[in-house]
Picture 1: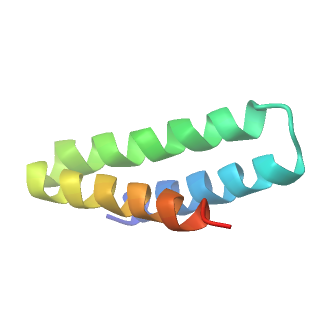
Picture 2: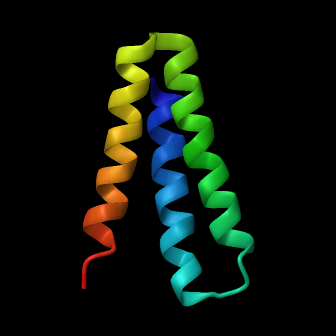
Length: 67
């Protein structure tokens, strides 16, 4: 569980840093971390936790994208 939380936090931080340091490297690394977190949640805890993790990531992006 801590790996999933760590990957989500690292992914979100990298995506946010991408807005300040353009070049797509940090953004791609962040998205890979987020996808890995969702995949690990599905693998280790089943569909319910996987969908919850996916919805949390989508919610963070939806709320973070509002200006």
